Image: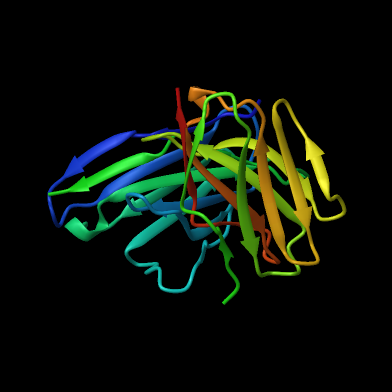
Length: 115
Length: 111
């Protein structure tokens, strides 16, 4: 099956620094990738839709200058949490869809802890 | 706004029994639904999907039922095993082609 890889799986950073999370589709091309955020014991909340070669579409309430998304190729999307603060600590999960298929394939998630 | 939600946040069943997890959705335009399983610290894992032109779909030990009249989705797990313990989410594909998740149900299987 299709594989989506996220890196890093865990990251700890100091408040005020920026953190980049990578999402790669390993064996297929993904024109669209999605970024989700999940707080403990809560559901996945869609943050933004990442489109290859164009600007990401952000959900209401998600700061685009805070969460920078770049989808530079058909196999890579990156999420950069800029000037991270403790409240940004969360589980970030990306997903990608096979062209023509409805199913989304998810990465294993990246746990961000901001001290 | 439109949302996907769940009736029960937790479900505890005896090993070997059948489990039923429910989900209510409100976007009548949704055309595709997926059930995901999420284990602690991991990303969601696809279980089964169903399109809006169907009302039932079966997989290995799992069945998804879709009732469009009352906007209700359910996941049935037959002969529940300890390895089935996890949080289960339903998700719907919205008009913008993105997937939105319900609140989740934690399934605990007692030996």
